[in-house]
Image (spheres, rainbow, N blue to C red):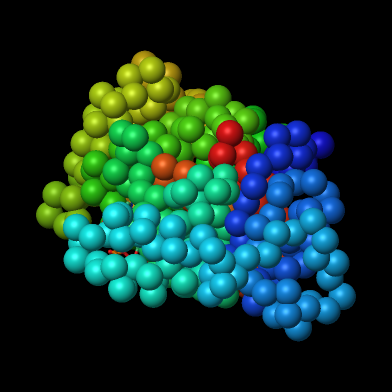
Length: 334
Ligand SMILES: CC(C)(COP(=O)(O)OP(=O)(O)OC[C@H]1O[C@@H](n2cnc3c(N)ncnc32)[C@H](O)[C@@H]1OP(=O)(O)O)[C@@H](O)C(=O)NCCC(=O)NCCS
């Protein structure tokens, strides 16, 4: 069974309720029907029956709960929740009533109120518009200040000596552009959780750099080496039981012989399966190299660090991508 099939099977066994915010999108309506049919989650779809039928007339909507923020009796309650969450930031009650009718905000408020277990949007909204409601009202998990993302990378086969699990986690490839040391430490800790909870591997976290244990430095330029060193120290202090080390070049992280040579005594060097990149440039380029040259399949971006699960779809997503994202979101709600 593939990892994705395992994730779906777990979601079926522990059926959660997920809100999909974009009933105006054909792919979302089709995915909602498929998820309902396969029993992956109970779906709340934001939209009207009329518009769903307009974009996807062939789709059977039975079993899907449709909700329209413009007419729902819940909108009033959600506006109050929004006002409470944002009044310190200057939001007025009128603004809260207006914004609660926005579909992505309404979905985030459903999640905040505990009326659904997870939120998926982004098929026809940008990443910023998809995540901002979550950042503003759902906020981060206890002890975590940074929402980030990772890709679960699935190997084309299990014969790669540098990735014996056949699965790896790459972070952050999609949200934090130039994370600080504190943010990198948060990214490392939540990526380890995603590795364990969703990818099903025992995390060994490598903090990546072009330097291994001080072999290189960029003091005169962007100072990423000291940043990664500081992030490593912060993450170790915050999660002392986690197998985490750095800073490592990629080969020192995955090749036992290089790890032993460059980082003798490290339990992670040469055996890492969770990779924390120093910034979004490195992370985004890195996962695409693994995908295109290495034949890895990338599941994600999986958002992590929120107090409750929210995930962002790519605007180029397929129906299958939406189904997979809902299954991952359902597992994060465990
Ligand atoms: C995450 C992101 C979407 C947030 O953008 P934004 O809406 O402009 O965020 P803002 O700076 O206005 O912040 C909104 C709120 O979220 C908080 N926030 C922003 N980023 C956060 C993060 N990574 N973790 C936790 N909180 C965050 C802010 O502190 C702010 O909170 P407040 O209003 O309560 O003070 C932004 O970082 C982004 O666009 N990243 C790159 C995404 C991208 O282009 N990816 C490429 C896809 S591959």
